[in-house]
Figure 1 (cartoon, rainbow, N blue to C red):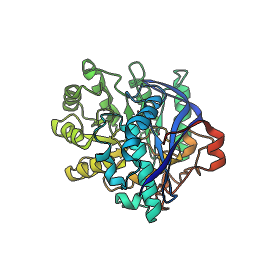
Figure 2 (figure 1 turned 90 degrees about the vertical axis):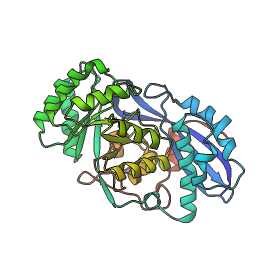
Figure 3 (figure 1 turned 135 degrees about the vertical axis):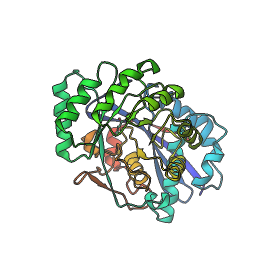
Length: 368
Ligand code: NPG
């Protein structure tokens, strides 16, 4: 294929409730959607999981726009290519995995729409539906009652696993309460780097709750801290922000800092890299699960396809659209008995609904 044009839609989707983590609170999803058209007139869609501010990682939306315009898109425009060529074509540009991943996804979507293959089949899917977990933020009012009401609602919806966001001052008490109220519900916690290696003895206290895992408790660059924690803790240590590529994932596993991997395609530069991490982990017998970044239906479709690969043995943050949005930009993703159907249509299998996309679009940039 040859790319003829690239358009960015900057959209704002109100969230059904604020989403608070140890690194900040989101009230609205401010998201960049890539619309790429090939010379043959095929349209591919990509979603960038960067946020407006560099709080989860160094990436942010305005930087993604610049990187696309000045460095990434010029390397893929006007030449015959396949999605598999993209990592090497843009490989000289350092960093910016979320911007790279969104571009690669739009190209892959166009390629698969042209051949009629679904993303799930292309990636090597082994399932037609996947179990869904839900990520529960820290309540805006710091209230345990608010937390319990929210968790009860998700359990009534059918979610098969609950993940609690934790931070110093909001950890043992909420985790104990949720665990004791729903002792059979698989439970895990995510600190988004809020602790340090000085907190290891405190974190070990989480062991009494029989958690599936503790996710990214310590700073992303502190591999030794995670290794020391993994040696001390019964609960498996899972890494998210620290994992950036297949080589670094394998290094972290080998070193003993990472016992379970959260795979987020955006964080690792796209679905091809995500698949490579999955394949490596599967070969080594290391469990993986699919993380979420409050995606719209486009990114959610891709995540559900990824999460249907055989190594994804734990439920992912692949919640239904209504967990975050009253109005998604695609047909909403729904859950039945805690399961979500893997899209089977060509490419992502979903596309933005034009009127809704227009309604939620704040600005449009013609990048190329
Ligand atoms: O279900 O999409 C979802 C959200 C899951 O908690 C979730 N994501 O740290 O993993 C995370 C967190 C996140 C959200 C990270 C937004 C970055 C941006």
